[in-house]
Amino acid sequence: MSLADGFGEHNLEDVVSVLVRLVEAAGAAIIFVGAVIAFVRFLLVAFRREGMDPFARLRLDLGRFLVLGLEFQLAADILRTAVAPNFTELAQLATVAAIRTALNFFLGLEIKEETALIRADKAAAAAPVTGAAPPGAGAKPP
Image 1: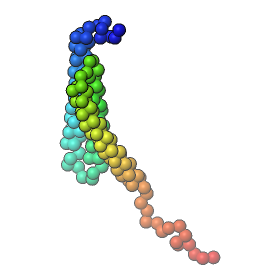
Image 2: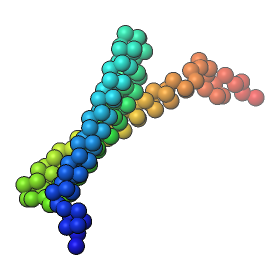
Image 3: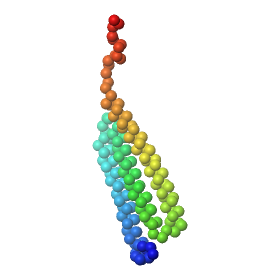
Image 4: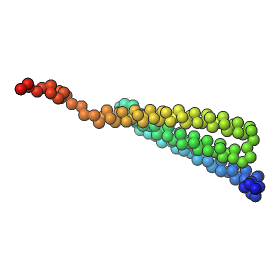
């Protein structure tokens, strides 16, 4: 006896439908909040002359929001097919999952690249700049 038998498949579908909407709304809210934060930060740094570093951080943070939001959207799609899926729904889930997984993969690559750029910029900024000669260059022979 499955849960659907005791609870009623129709009732279970209604509950899952509400849960799907909640998870989708959470994913959309995460993406929206990330976009708003990124836009506000863009306005704050757009006219400064600090090079590309602020934009790299901005893109990195926005990418993180997008990845998290897409994960919620994928979770909603999986939840949608949890109750009595038919072949069409499974095929749609597979297609959507493949697209979202590819998006997450490429966003993840961009996040890694942006993180590496930020670390490289910080390391370059922290390296001491001196005009001193290399060791032993000014020493007199004995």
